[in-house]
Length: 188
Image (cartoon, rainbow, N blue to C red; front, top):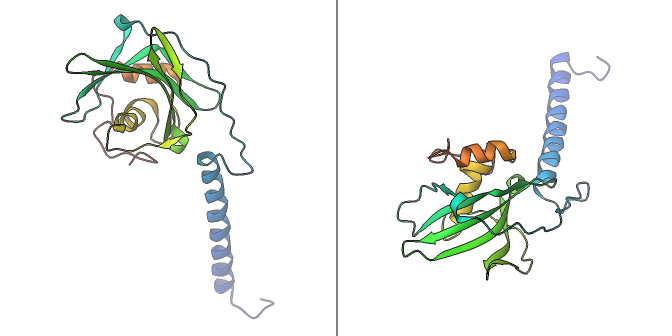
């Protein structure tokens, strides 16, 4: 006991310092994966490659679980890809009760709970949209289906993307596990 403090006091002081150091280290690691603007983590988005126009006979109906939703949702299983950048890309078809449909090529970044629309279906092909950046997923409003896709089908409870095989298996379920339960991670 060189500094005059008792062993118990020294031990508490050491533990407090270690706890602060660990908290700062963990916060730094967790934040980098979610915020590509951090200097130490230079996230690079994969180049845009448009998928083929979906074959309507192979579309998978997806239960979004929102009462009163004016649309039915379908995913083209042939378009679903998880990129090297961790983005799950897919073609989604929104069909109204009157039969009108909209086709979008989108991506979800599980690690940041964000989405982006890359292109929309038009004239038998896709038209690329201007890059408006990645938008936060929301559980309410007209784009809430993306939140539910991420939470129930495409992202794990730890905010990581399911691989393509697992995501497709979940999409083929009538109701994915957890779609109606309290979420974990970024999908609460």
